[in-house]
Amino acid sequence: MENGYAMIGLKGKYGFIDAYGKIAIPAEYESAAPFDDMDGYTKDDLLFAVKKNGKWGFVNMLNKIVIPFEYDEVLPFSYGVTMAIKDSRRGLINTSNKIIVPFNNSSSFGLSKNFGKRSYSLSTGSYDYTGKKEK
Image (cartoon, rainbow, N blue to C red):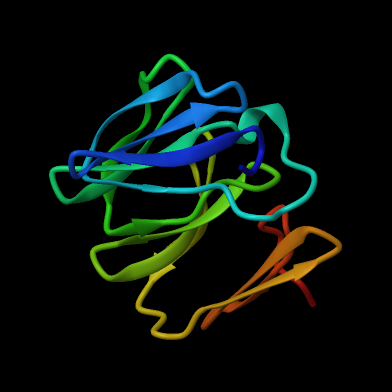
């Protein structure tokens, strides 16, 4: 259980339950990405990464689509930013699906945690937990 939710699998489909065992997101998706052990999630980060028709997107607490199912791969959000892969290209997006770091042909990707905050390494440089390029 991370961030108050745990991923569940039922009959080959995935969703989430809350800390009380109540279904938060129905198990109706091909896959789901559990929240990880990041500290300092913001309330805006409470979007659930789920996969439908072979693509990843994000739904909110009401199971409404917030970010369309258009990504090959995603991570849960942290501090409003996450890495996503689209058409085999890596980039960073925010919780409004705005591109923070343009998608590129980066074959390398690094993710590190510093005091619970992610930093991202792409072929275009290193980016802090807000998506700002580090010098």
